[in-house]
Length: 459
Image (cartoon, rainbow, N blue to C red; front, side, top):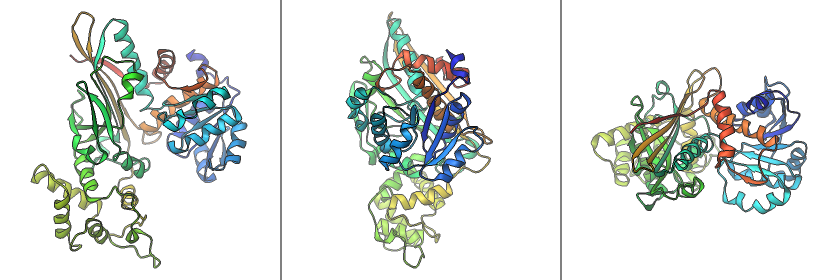
């Protein structure tokens, strides 16, 4: 099977929608295997940039909110790969339904997608989701271990899965230990999502504004990394999806370097994740933006824009474990520039105005690489009553001269899945990689390309 999918035997056509960094690895894989690929972006220039140096790739300008234009392009191909923000996936799926064309995304299967399931079935098309990194590669190895344990008569008592997309350690020299290779807004908004999970038999829920307070030091067994972990979104459906009803703990979450969460918590307390429009954050007619210190004072309601008054206002809204933590956080806010005379980039809301500055100060340099660290932890009870703790770990670095780790680990599984959809391997309807039949072939093909999680028994 792997030889078939590695060969340049396809005469199929695909449309990839998106301008993000994950598009190029998927595009290159498909083009290398003989698929005629068109890349559609709102900006023709962006599409041409992505297609550069990829033989046979075609670039077009396409707005997915233009139904007629989207349908025209959808009808020309066998599969549409939607790598645009998840809120637009339903528009793409509806086009696939109208034109009876298959769809692949790397995003979680949303309620809006599920509402379309009957129409997807009636159209006789495949809509494959959750096949990137997280979600994606994480599913492939979770299903593997869970199936192995169940087949041997054992039980999964606790399941933890944490993933972090981070700068490599040598590129992490800022107070948050973080850099943006994608939209700062998307990442910051995710920090406001409510988290739900199972822990020791109980359902726990953490409101978004309290999420950073749950962050704890997390030992991965790789002692060179000082990670903290916090829960991410709703983990509770995975007890059913992974078929582990016996598990009393199911937590999926995010990894960050130590120091990140305390600063973000303070930004939340200060009001910087607000999406409310503020007149003083709108662009001015004279094109002379306000300074950060004046804006910070206004958002906080500080008595003045002096640093001492701003810090006093922060202290009235946020709490710190001790003086050392407060000093570290204040130093981080100072590094961002919130107390400075530097002009803001006005974006109407506190969140968007902050993100404009974060994207400038926390962008990857030309020779810097990223790190992806993904780890599952299974606490197992075997048939004979003995206990075991097993981990599956992926630690991958980007290539400063090529793909980032995140781009490769999202785009490559996606490309493999597209090839298998084109080959008609999957049934009709909404498809997710939650079964051995889907996961095993993709996992083995990724392994042949040097992408795999290392499985170990640690206790």
